[in-house]
Image (cartoon, helix red, strand yellow):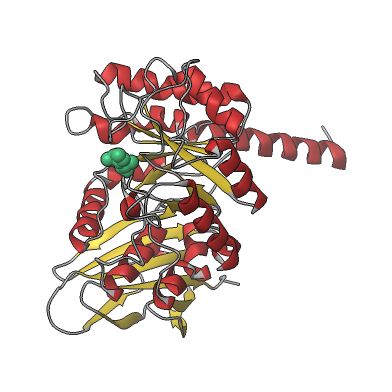
Length: 422
Ligand code: GLA
């Protein structure tokens, strides 16, 4: 039997669509709200400003509309928005202690005199988006009204105000069952509003250590999810997050992808607790982990060095890579950890992390075949160092080695771009 050219083309196309459908079935389904196709980027008040309610004594650092308006202004004027940080997010402690007569949450009238709606309008007028915080249980972690029993009302209130992201905490929830029901209920309630609202969960964090989270399920309801304890402005905290992530990577890495991400918590770069090399490590590893890049710092007072690191376009591009695959720890040696992440266009990001906290820069050599499943540098590759400073290392053959120096607690972040074989 003979096929015409168009029949043959038709069959090829049909086969191609079948393969696509099959691949789609194999992918872990994500929350279908079209959001967070790459990790969310923005600013959140918690780590830096916590629950400061004292606007008399500390007008510049209390949780008030002024704080968020100032951050929004700076996100535009200081180039943050241009490189992708576009969500200005409120954490705990924005609420009045009671709901209103109709059962709706309300902002504290002294600290947010224009209410959340006016703040949302302001943030939107700057081309940015507004995030808010609530809790699945009876109270927020800081003791403000929880959403338990009010999920639909709260979702509608947030949508009416023009909110674009909800961080939904898990304090004061009476059982693991109610926790799951609550997180699912709020996800559906947000979807029902018809407004695009990124849904940032802490569901798995509140399940550990007694219960194993079902990440496939969580991904169907949340755009990102916290797995581990709150970040602090300290090296110890960064190390714990990285250690947890590496030791649980078999469970969590494959679940991440466009629409749903593991959230190792805020970037604390630009604060007080991390040395320069430790800040480089946070930025490099958050890029490898495809983590939401949500800063918690004071954009009014940030060093040029920290700002340049947070605004590093090459590193942001790794974090936001459209392939959307989370990286992992490839190997742990006595003094060095090697992490890698596959990128689009047959490229790889490689992070070489010096675990030593004593001495000077460590010389480290790695064979290139050991990286990127043997193909990152096959048959050869161009190597660009992105952190701590940008440096073009040029061409390397498949069988060669790469040698560098890594500062104590620091990381060298590389991009390997394989040359095509023909
Ligand atoms: C929990 C969360 C933090 C922060 C606080 C606010 O601890 O994990 O990220 O939102 O609550 O009270």
